[in-house]
Image (cartoon, rainbow, N blue to C red; front, top):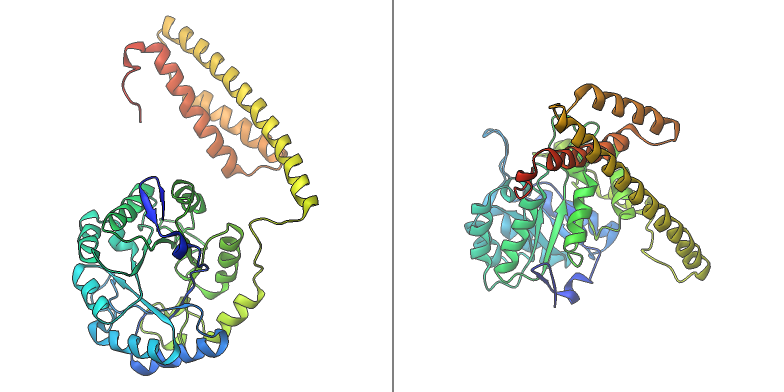
Length: 369
């Protein structure tokens, strides 16, 4: 058992990766579930977790909201026939109780539930004493604290077979994705809880089959610990999320063509070259920090001049010129506009903070947002 930042993770369980979840968005009927399970089993065997939603939290009440409790025995039949571990989404304590009674092996908490600490705590209370694996999807919006908080609540209930699912974030403009894959948030979660398995829900990020291979490859390159891909025997007839599901054969073809890379290698030439290049990067980083510190010294000097002349800190025209100049320079150097803006936004925020501390020294003790 390991403990990272307050999370206790079962190391033996966590090392048993990849955690791959394949199966339909929803359990629609016994035949649909069995046909899908059989199709995947014929292509891949049983070394994965079979997924199917039983309770579907839909935006509109007239949408298919799942078959409910009646579908749990269908999942159990699939488990008994094909030897899969089975999984479904839970959103309240009653869901947990029904799943445990029907021998569901893996539960996941959906994005709509993760946003509510009350709902997560209710689920956590119902999980106490249970020997079950639980995965927590990121909240709908890009809030890392909510994601971490949900994981911590489930962990405090005694669940040590615990993982996370990155399914992307709802944004006003997520194009070309259904949910924007803000990969850096998943990486920040991994940095905080470094023994926590993180699975990529490529279906919900993509929203359409054509993007799934790209998202899968990206997640593998980021060394994620598994995949969740919605797979249906007849996607065009699916009662929910028909546009993003693929067939068992398409799933097999996808997994066959993606490239699985290792996190390291014993090739000594590679190790030596990496050490050489990383040493060079460290030296450049040190020089960059020295330059940033010199920049901030000049910023403080400007702050003193502004204070003496009663001039405001924020100068919108100056900031616009800095951003335009830096973006153009970055473009010439092959750096993306998004990166340059993100970098200089951070530099500008710190510059404002530095000038404020010079012009308002009595406010230094107050935390700034």
